[in-house]
Length: 190
Image (cartoon, rainbow, N blue to C red):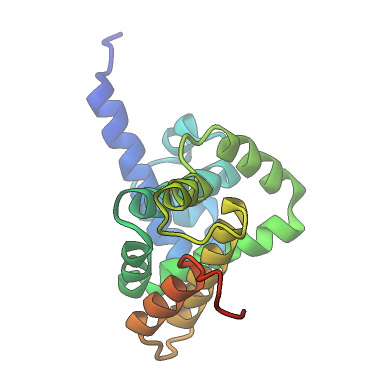
């Protein structure tokens, strides 16, 4: 049996992820049946699930990929880049990402898989905030972890507004976010 190249394996995996993202965006997690995944991806269930053990594992990988993308954007370009990316993101795909939050509340197996994979992630937003604190460009009266949680709350809230097609000025979101995490003047009342 001929050996398949790593490039072929990587291309097939990317094809599966891209098709699954389209399918989840169109039908949501529950509506993205195996038959719909097969149709959207253009491969048989055997081919799809040779790369991912289950639909849930496929969904977890997509959620992690998005997390990596936004974490990398923040680490490399700052909070503005994340806000800009959300502003330009497909609203249907953002609505699927909101399903991630619901699954975190109601699906213990999903939580376990996502947490296990997330623990292996090399970069976190809190790491970026720690760097900003050391450089004096982020407030130091709060833990970097709390600043990261706050930034995530704002960015996720902005994503919710995009999904709802509610007009929200990305520039205003950026300015308010910067103001909230900027170093504090010790003499100014809070």
